[in-house]
Amino acid sequence: MWSNQYLAYERLSAPIRTLLDGLSAVHDAGSHGDPATKATHPAIRIHPETGRRALFVNGTSTSHFVELERNESDALLAMLLRVCEQPELTCRYRWKAGDVAIWDNRCTQHYAVDDYTGTRIGRRVTVY
Image 1 (spheres, one colour):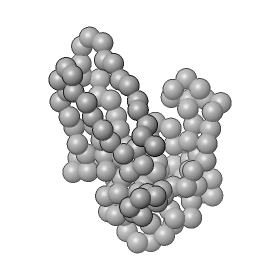
Image 2 (image 1 turned 135 degrees about the vertical axis):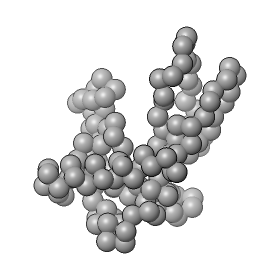
Image 3 (image 1 turned 60 degrees about the vertical axis):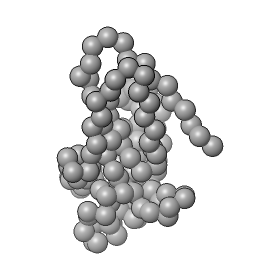
Image 4 (image 1 turned 90 degrees about the vertical axis):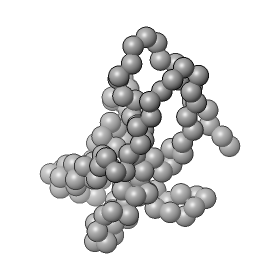
């Protein structure tokens, strides 16, 4: 599944977008078995080619916003994740053997649905 983070950002009210433009989010790799690896990124990412703003938080690795108290951060993050997960912002693909998917990680979230049997093989390719 993929979620359009341009649209997630654009659905937010102007005051929330203004707040987010000044926030940094901490992301950690704990869900991938490496809790010591952390990075801080702007909560809003500006696409280098389109100039469009996209929400840059996710439920898997975003732990909190640096500039907010923890309870404020938790409430804001929960609200943002509900926006990201709205069905009308998502695309779910039904895979068949030999399929290839290409997406722009700078403006989407992706989630691998555990609805298959057998071995799933994924290869990541980064285009420069």
